[in-house]
Length: 556
Picture 1 (cartoon, helix red, strand yellow):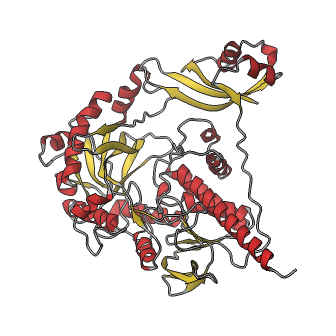
Picture 2 (cartoon, helix red, strand yellow):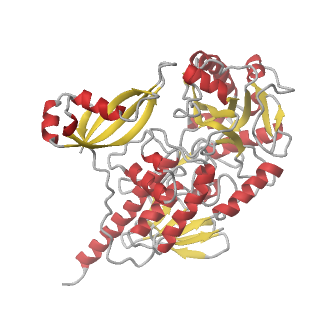
Picture 3 (tube, helix red, strand yellow):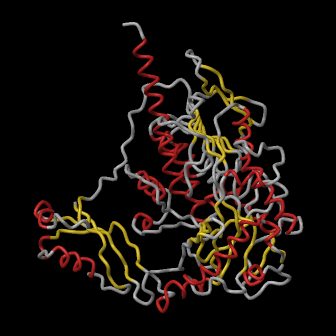
């Protein structure tokens, strides 16, 4: 088949308009086209009031070669890529089952692929099964009752379960692993449209049932889940060549599990795990991260600013946005994890800290739009912030930085997991809010009017104050005086990277396969799932090499 890209049509085009556009573009007679399938559908909203749909279409043609030759210089026409996932050859025998730590999208896809290749992984999850986790999380939102092991960050499904469920990424994916991730999600109950639309999303409630179905699939293939099982230590020994390698895992109940292949897929908030890795001598480095706030506007305002008179069109749905500003102080300010028609959620995982995040359901039908407005940081910034127990020049300094500002937000919110909030008008004027305006904040358990400057580094406050009016020039109404900002947003990414080599293993501990957001290799559901597949393949390749080495050393 051939793929034709960039077919632009009006929003309300006729049912046969795609086919007719193909025939016109390629100058074909109707009988030359045997069939077509929509490969991708997006929209071009650069001209408000003249928004167009943009299609990529796979074509079944009577004479592909002739059409390709006739349009050899058209970069929009090419052969349809082969996106079939091909499993690696399974090793003949393994003495120990691989272990996956974490059941977020990275761990979930790693475990699934390992199970599909017959390796019967053991999956360790510190939190609870997703239904019980949902109950615990809603109890925190309603009553401020934080469960440190069962919350937005920890539990089956990972942090992405309570998010907008975005399923797109800008990562390089030459082997089309992203397609494998989406196909597995569809098999687990996601709508088939995620295979076609340019910015697919699922929403929290659908993610819950999907995670359950994927667990059932993994278990049916021989995988074993162990919930409420927290890893507290890493047993590192040496092989016969005196190279350091993983030998086992210490668990919170005092037991130890023997392991030779461990996929580390803990997510970005497993700070105690990173501390344990450091104690075991695993190579770690501090990495850049971001800090800021969640901002909320009426979704109707964002729709009008983005879509103009076509706002509210059923095909377009709730509008999103992506904004970037380079401030005079050298800081980058950008929107993060934008959630159309969603809510701001309490995302703390440690006592005494306030953390915000955004979440949407599949319908994206809530009153407000929200997004993180965050400022980029580098590890050198961590030295400016008090470090409780961490070396400011060490690999864990970012954890101390995050904790410091989360605790400041907790204090500003009254010490009850209420969050400090401020109107944009007051923030720009440099005065604390005492009351909020027409935009009702969605954060639960609740908010306390405050001065967010007390919860952020000075350079971040300065950069955001400069950025908001600039964003308003690009998105009319963004600096609305009554728009509400809630703090703080600290968990945009992991503060630590676990370096790995080309073989997917830790640089100094063989058998440990760092992967996903927590190890610093992904950002979002899709990229984390893709990295989980890579980690599973790295495990299989390592086992195959070991098998080959044993075979080569065996007497003939």
